[in-house]
Image (cartoon, rainbow over all chains, first blue to last red; front, side, top):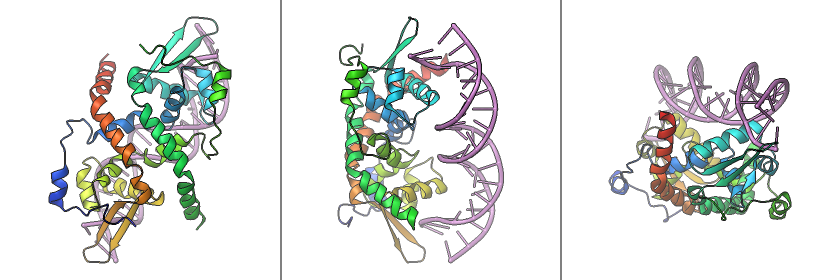
Length: 134
Length: 134
DNA sequence: CAGAATCCATATGGATACTG
DNA sequence: CAGTATCCATATGGATTCTG
């Protein structure tokens, strides 16, 4: 099936393709995955693409998540500058989360991941079911 | 900074945006991240977008990875139908890895992640350095 | 409401040694 | 060469309780 579209590379051809990334990790793909690859980060980011949301709203939008994990993942997204956190000094407290300018640059990737998931979930779950059943 | 581009959503507006995913996870984004979100999967997939590679070539392309992790992550990618594994019954053994047809559908996302990483690594590392220094 | 703190189980991943 | 197998440290994440 995967024939001439995947040329077999010799070590020389492979080296010719190598780029020096000038990156602390081996490859910038790792950075992007580190930033949105957490168990819940992608989903959080996705929901925030729809607009600013409060902590409780996010929690209700993501059924499986615990309060603790939502807090932790939001803090990491905030630390990496993808999400802005605004605290309103009221009683009871109100905290709003929104994508930052840089966070918004990830929107195309998030939506591409959404579309891919919708498109290929049957394929993936089909394979997994087959293998765990055998 | 992140002003009118992120409208504050009421609970009613938020519900109107909800889609029923018909998905085992809460949201298809989770599936996509589950499939390529592993510590090394993205990088492995990226290198395979350049062509078919042998086990040892992949290992040399990804400096930090151990033999064990490369094996495990390749097995998962194979189980999810993203990577084809071909064993040549020779001595010494030769095993080649290539993106499957479905795996190739992830190429746009992988390359978008590469570009994003190149573009924003300074931003992210800048923030992280600032915070860990304080 | 939006969390912080604590406790604890499991998953993840590294190092090393061995093998067909 | 391309793995397996084993051991072990740490990271991740859930459940629960408490608070400004």
